[in-house]
Length: 163
Image 1 (cartoon, rainbow, N blue to C red):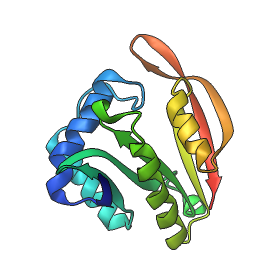
Image 2 (spheres, helix red, strand yellow):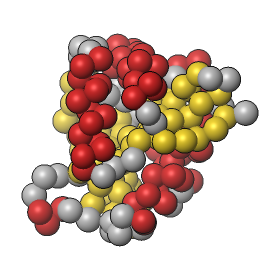
Image 3 (tube, one colour):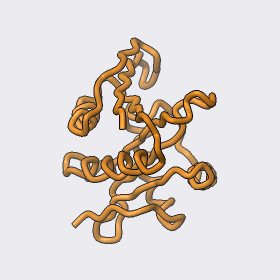
Image 4 (spheres, helix red, strand yellow):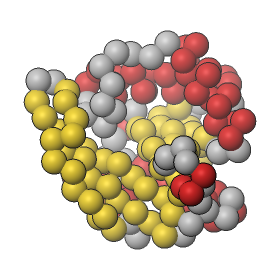
């Protein structure tokens, strides 16, 4: 059984492993170099300081995915809008982990009295786009060739949910 709970510092090594696999092997994150534990610690502390939750999906004492929300843009006028992130371990994709990690983010956004959630998704990631649409996200933009990874140009879709 997969349980969803708030992340703790003890979860960071497994979360880092998932994130780095995604950086190295997918276009879900448009970064080129794996992150360090120090980077992940700073990221986690910043989430806490900003009041944004980080959730983990845990199965048999193993982290199989995580999700969070954070600032969409830094200017004050965007303070009611956040961007979400959902990451699932490679060997657990297609098992419904993302479906478990997205609702707590939506609930958290409502509790924080936010207005909208933006999901920036590689246009070829049909699974993530379908997941978000199941929860009411709608496509707001399709940006052509705004990213570059694996020697090719990437399109970005922005999906939005008004909460």
